Structure formats: C-alpha cells, structure tokens
Image 1 (cartoon, rainbow over the protein chains, first blue to last red):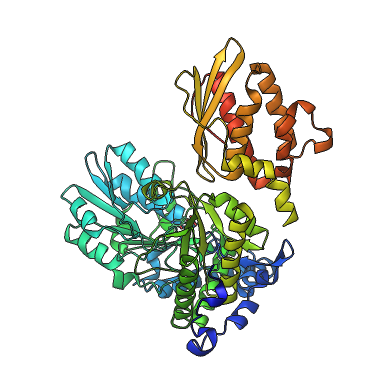
Image 2: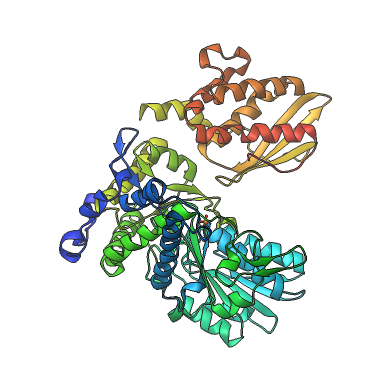
Length: 423
Length: 150
Ligand SMILES: Cc1ncc(COP(=O)(O)O)c(C=O)c1O
C-alpha cells in the first residue's frame, strides 16, 4: 500500500514559495491552534466556510466596542464614522473585483441572496413565458432553485448545460443550448464539488454574441483566484464573504451599472427610498436601491479586514502554494486503492471530492472527524451533480492557503485508517 | 478509536456488509420511500401487512453503514410484530439513540437493536439510524409519501 511518505512532496513552502511562509500565516488564524477529539485540527472544509484571521475577528469586535451605530442615518460622530467605514468597504470590494464603479457593489448576505436578488429583480422584469435560462449541470442549489422558481412563475424554461466525465463543462453542449429564446445564463466560476474552474470568459463571450447577460457564481472562485469582473466582462458576479475569510452573513453582488439602474428594487424598506408618501415612493439610486434595511455593518467591517488581509498576503504568493498542495493531495489520494476522485478537470481549484469502494462518505466523515480531520460529506447542495456521477454523496476535502503538506499526509493516513477500520 | 467502536459495533458492521432482507418484494401491500437529504441516503421499504400484523418486510437502498445496518435489523426484528408493537419499539429505539434513555434502562423488547446505543454519542448520525424507522411509519400510515429526516 502506498503511504504518504513514498509520495514525492514538491519542494514546498520553503524552496518553491520563498515569499509564502505557511507557518507564519497559520499564526494569524486562532482556530488552527484548536484540538478536536484530542488531535490537532486539520481543517479541510474550506469550501463550506473558511476560517477567519485574527484581523477579521478584531474588526468585528472593534465595531461593537468603538464604532457601533447605524449607517446612513445619523448626523452624530459614531454614525458618520460607521458609514464611512461601511462605504470604504464598498470601494475596497470594487478594487478587489476590479469593478468600474463602487456603486456596482451591493452588500448582501452571501451568494444565495445575491442570486435571489438578480433572479427576482432582473428576472421578474425581463423574463417572459417561453423564454429560456441556461445554467450548468454542476451548480449549487442556490444557482438552481431561484431560476427554477422564476421559470415556474413566468412559464419560462430552465436549460442545463451538460458536464463531461472529467467534471469539465461540456462547452459545445452549452453552445448548442443558446438560441434566440435564451434570456439569461447563470453559471458557477468554480464548482464547489468538483473544483472545476469554468472557462468563464469564454462563457460570457459566447452568451454576449447572443445578447444574453451572464451571472457568474463566484462563491468558490474568489477564495482561490484573482477575480477581474471587467476582464471577464460578466454582467453579474457574486461572492460570499464567509468563504473568503470574512464573517458569516455578508457577501457582495457585482452588477453592471446599466442593469442595476434598470432593475426594480429587490426588497422594500428603509434606505432604499428617496422619498415616501402613501401615494408614491421614489427609489434611491444604486447601490442603495438594493440595500433595504439596516445592513450587516459588523460583518461588512470584518469583510473589509479580510480583503486587506488577502491583499497583503497576495494571490500571486499563495495561489502557487495552494496549487502545489492540490497536486500533491491529488496524487496521494489517487494512489490509494479503492478510492476514486470525482472531478479531474485540467483547470482546478484546491477542492477534491472522492468516493471509496463499499464505504459511504458519511462513515468516512465520522471516522476522519475522530482524527481531528474536518471534511464535508454528502451531496454538497448539488444533488443533480451527484446523480450525474451516479453517486449518492462524496467526501470532499477543500483546501485553503493555511493548509499544509503535513495535513494532506494526515488526511491520506486517515483515509487508509477508514479502510482498515471498516474494511 | 475506542469510541468509534461504540458506534461501529461488530454487529452493525456485519449487517452493513451483508444486510438481511435486502430485496424487492412484489407482494408487498405497503411501501414507502425515505430520504436523508443531508447525506443522500435513500431507502425503500416493502411491508406485507396481514390485518395489523407485519407478515414480512424488506428494503432496498443505498446508505451509510449505520443506516444500512438499521434497515437490516429493523426488518429482522419487526417480522411478525403488530403495527402497535412496531410503534412502541420505534419510541424506545428513538429514546435509545437520542440518549433519552441509557442502555442499562433500555427495554428488553429492543433485543439486538440495542447495538445502536452508541449512536447517542454521535448526534449527527441519529438520522442515519432512524431514517428507516420514519419510513416504516410512513408505510404503515399509508400516506405513502417520501419521508425525509428533515
Ligand atoms: C458554488 C456555490 N454557490 C453558492 C453557494 C451558496 O453560498 P452562501 O451559502 O454563502 O449563500 C455556495 C456555498 O455553499 C457555493 O459553493
């Protein structure tokens, strides 16, 4: 049996990545010092939610200790400064995603809310009976159900671009679906189950040839890739802060100004209005038109700290490290007898889904947990994709830049242990 | 790994690898489907009811070791029982796997089902053990809808 020791480890953090010191980075994440069931935590569930650096935790705390006030509503010092910090975050996100204008950034709870906002505000206005919306076969439920609901309401049709056995998008299959009835395309940039990095730019280019706008679900892309919405030329882009080292309950929707301005509001309430009488309400301008009610201010300031953290760490520095980690883990896991990786696309982010002969992922998850190893097991909110690959569920190890080669060794050893225990 | 052995008792592993009563039953007069959306486990239960007595039962499905063993042992245990007895056993089984009742105070009628006592230490796995029981309840109530553990 192959052991992790026999697997050649690439010249890791030290030689190949002189600018990336993983041990130092790990110090920034308090939770990584935790022990689970008496073992050091090995956190491989980053696609579900990532861990938070101290700076993010501190930013939330500072808001409540020193800056707590509502935004856009007060003339007093605290409100003014809280508003400033909140709006500065919008500008940071604009730069982070390379949007043309900070008004194109709308704060939401996360990707789920972002997609629902577009499906309901853009969709209700622009989709009619007989129209077609295209998604792919590898979408998260949050990029399926809102479109299904819209189609049901309008009498429109949901078309699904197929997925190849490798876990790549069947691009020609997608191409064949586009026609004069197509009104919208919504696809993930990176698959949360397969790790596939979709050819987002080509998807957008092709859809635009048919004058069809494109939403990219970037929930899993933003933590691993440098996102440039202008280079992608997508019409909408979504991110979830909590997968991006920021707190839960905060995320962002990017939308091109021309769409956002033409869209009706999503929810009604405070902040989204310019004036209200009982006869008529005039809506606020973008982005406020889409931000009804008191937002998640503390979360936004945590988001701001997370963006600063990532900018300091630099994608150029951690992305190659993460890639080597992915290659190393992929080789080590593929070498195990009776273990099969689902999702072998050429372009992948650091996500590995696998199944084991005669052993259900749920049992794998429980046994690994006792070793302190956190993985996700189940259908990962992508039931149609499970059906596509004919598996009820998978075990998924999803990595972040703070994971180490030693942790991959522990995972591989853990998987061997599962086989011995249940075998 | 000692506490893992409490969950994965030898008898559970045995039943999960070679489950009893794993077959389609064309002569069944009650069936129901169970689905655990959390892990994708699916079970279909076939019951042959004669009056209020369960004359025979079998299952089909794919699931983890705990849910497969639970289906196997349920089908073994309930053969010949009345629907009222099955209901009472479900209550007792539920109390055992949720830790409401300790192993030493568990009812003797549970018999082999007592091997599931270890599940109480693994709250995330309670639904694996109870899926087939919820499915049985649905089959007997004749609502015949797919039940989920949610
Ligand atoms: C690809 C993808 N899209 C959407 C979502 C939903 O994100 P959230 O739960 O943050 O709204 C997730 C997260 O699970 C995801 O992985």
